[in-house]
Image 1 (spheres, rainbow, N blue to C red):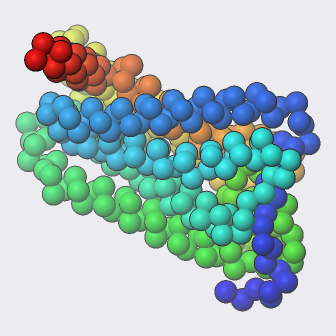
Image 2 (tube, rainbow, N blue to C red):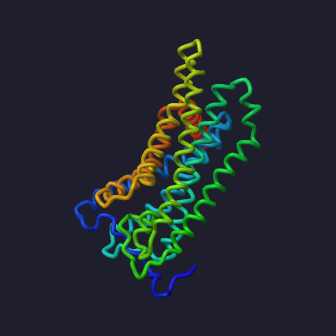
Image 3 (cartoon, rainbow, N blue to C red):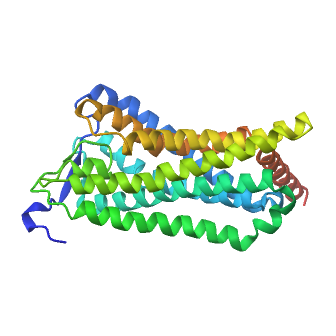
Length: 318
């Protein structure tokens, strides 16, 4: 790192919407409720996928990975945001900002790839049903999940290093709710053109290319589903894939808006709200989308609840 000592602040001020204090109470309530629902929903999916043997399939293995991602994703930012909203000094330490930047970027990049892997799993399940268990064997599932995590964290190492090497010249007011690459680049007193070009290139790799692969997968999936004779079979196939498509649309749509649009002063508040959407709202909605639209998950929840009541009843009788 080649900063001058005086260019490295001890802490950053996270401005958020501090110029609009009337928004703080509604935002606090929204963040708190969203975070509680995210924790409860994603932990429930992880738990039920682990305990119910009927969900020990590749689809739910990847869904468990997604839930773990979303759990850590929101935990890297929301607690600090809640503290800052309640505080008159909306600060985060330099080390805390670096950690937040690295974790948020790593998990976000991993989720981009994992959603593409999940679309491949659905493609094999619907277009190659007779060979599904042979193709999506346990080793391949572990390799695909590991590749997503390793690629995401590798990208974060590169992006975080490039961002943190930029001289700040004493600037420490981050016009955002948390430490994110675009917001930190605006603090630099040097030319950030190269960094913005690198960010755009990597965003294409982690956002546009997975979206293209997902769309190709679903083009084949739609063709295969339309060839299914029974209406019940078509409805079940579309229902399973529909949940994944909703998640993909919410996550990629907002992330592409944030990272692949040209920077504009007039859009900075919109950018804050968009990043809140894919950083907080989407992780909260993911478990709701998958559980409300998925009969297997709802059935697993019912079996676990029935089992818990039975164990409790037997304990009372004993």
